[in-house]
Image (cartoon, rainbow, N blue to C red):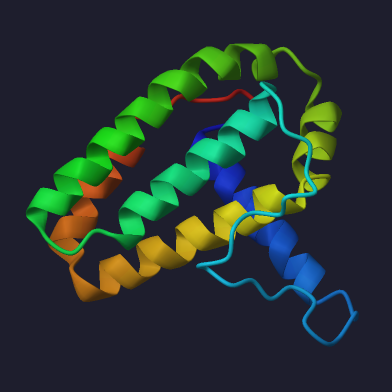
Length: 145
């Protein structure tokens, strides 16, 4: 499964959470809000993934022209190199454990929503610039699910 597919799983989880009947502010996120501080920090794959996904979201949110798209692509490439190393550890886990790890992290869902929203906004505002970033995203490491 690619990193993009993990993002889709996260967005689906967020949608399910938002539709879970909790009412009020359940499922809402503020794109500018920091990721939940209550989540454990560490050097595990999910912590690294969430941190790097937020770095990518920051870069995409700041993209407004070709030069900033190149900067965002560099951020994505750097994150990809780190994720490539960490994904080898994640790949050997059973599928059920991978799913449980993903679903247990509210910061994972928030980071995915934030990145998805930033990419949607950019693709609407400037499809050419979004294409440059998409090419860098396509080079992110694959994680077998």
